[in-house]
Length: 218
Image 1 (cartoon, rainbow, N blue to C red):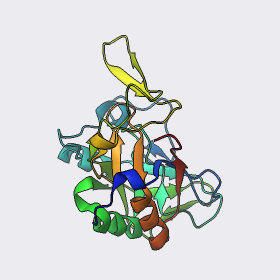
Image 2 (cartoon, one colour; image 1 turned 90 degrees about the vertical axis):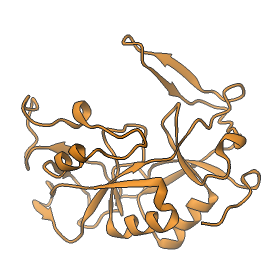
Image 3 (cartoon, one colour; image 1 turned 180 degrees about the horizontal axis):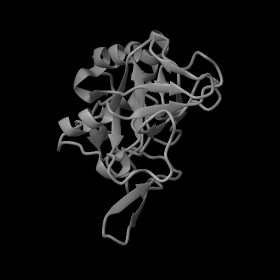
Image 4 (cartoon, rainbow, N blue to C red; image 1 turned 90 degrees about the horizontal axis):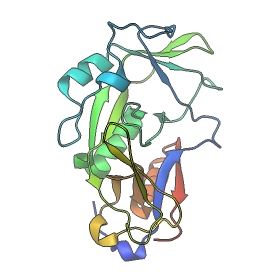
């Protein structure tokens, strides 16, 4: 991947493309029908999903993810290259098809880890998706990239002592910390961000389902 000067680039927060009718989210389930409540003896992503210190899925997590169904409710029989979104919630990672997986690996293979999904069930059209393989994605590159003095980053502390960050305008980046990266997860807000270089790759490859919110003050 060619390095470009970060002071000449635009940057973006990656989100779900809500304006594209092909975009969609998912929910986990032990089967084709989501249980309520979730059985105590079934592996639960929000409780049990684990990552290594370098942000890879653990082997146990990869094994358990393949046992769960992804339930989707698409408006059309066709849908975007990504199910879900590159968001801040680690227990709901995006699931990408083979086209997007190959494009991500070619762009920057060291930045991503993949775990194959379990069965995908389209509840609206009553069908199991078998036309393509899908893979959960973990963004391995974490950068503390917001300018803490000049951005609207707010850090809050939970009752258990852990903290989390939320970014508000102005969206000011620390370009020295980014150090030429073109896609990363912010270590404070957990948003996934990218530069023009990644956005151009997505457009060139014809990948769908991603919305790029431009950071105007960086």
